[in-house]
Image (cartoon, rainbow, N blue to C red; front, top):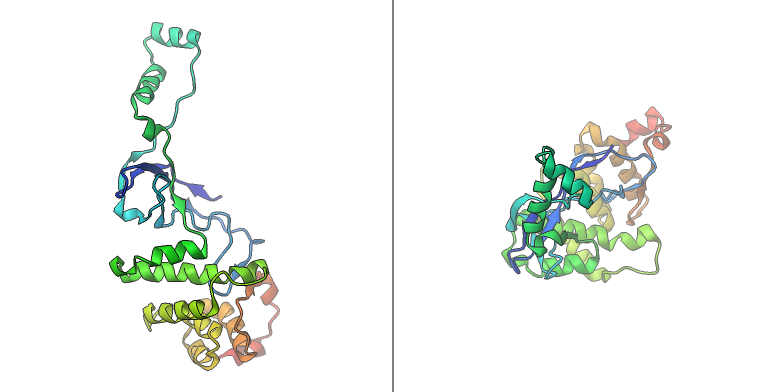
Length: 253
């Protein structure tokens, strides 16, 4: 079962407002949820704990590392009736219920009403974030460009009328992401970027260097590249590809 941590209280460096954020502590992958050739998965928990988002108070985009983590986010205690309050008072508040109420009452309203950190999700979100690229670390730019790539492919996933990112801008983003990726890593992702850019021979040239634990996806990418297919594709469940023959697998390498 997927599990989340308890929320942590943070302070925005831009407006000093408060917000809360949880992270994933355990993941469960549901077999009936699709994954995609560009690496995006659509599990319900995808994106939780993102390192970048918007402050719910001022809407400024910020990296979580730049926001002070103050303490576990306080939770409002259950209300006590007058009779319960009297009982706890007479019995010495052994359970700490009255103390919890006093501590909650003493907190500033801004902390009590702190909203959740807003994760980025749209093409415009990532364009806005990349507007501050001059002050970013390379791995931050890489993260945002990958997210923008995925968001620019979402109209294919939804089968909607058209892309939210103009084709020329989408290609420029993919080219820049390729330049940011180290040549000795992220091989599957580089294959997919080359394929979606229509650079099929470059995509195919990387297939033999993909490690064995990634052969299943690489085999599909090879088929699509050989067919001249540059669109994002859904990755079938593992059982759907287990029917390929050993001869087909040998051909892939």
